[in-house]
Length: 159
Image (cartoon, rainbow, N blue to C red; front, side, top):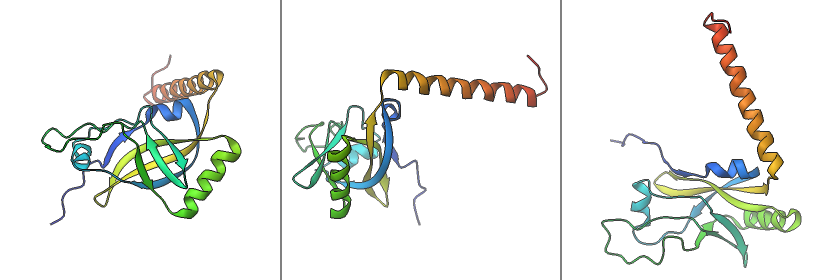
């Protein structure tokens, strides 16, 4: 009998969409040690401040916090250690080319389970300027306001 599938998303980087213009994204496997998977199954992780870089034709994830599993006897190497991402060679070459040519960053967007394995969604990102952030915030607020007005009209209320 198959287990009922819970929400497989462990962590989201909500600030990434606020701080960056997100571009193309890829799904990557991640190399974990010891009881890190059990800590992730408890839903304990943070992508805030995380980034990836290409080093010697390999992609490494830095700054992602996976705390120590509480029931473990295994001594952790560090909760914010760098972790290797698993991608195809052609994907790594494409990412490296785009990062070097256009000065983009690699940002983790989502950490989740897929078929029992931990996956990370990474995206190419270009930093937003301060006025870009204010503009996107104003657009979001305008969309909310129009949604409120439409729902009031549908309910038969007038302002």
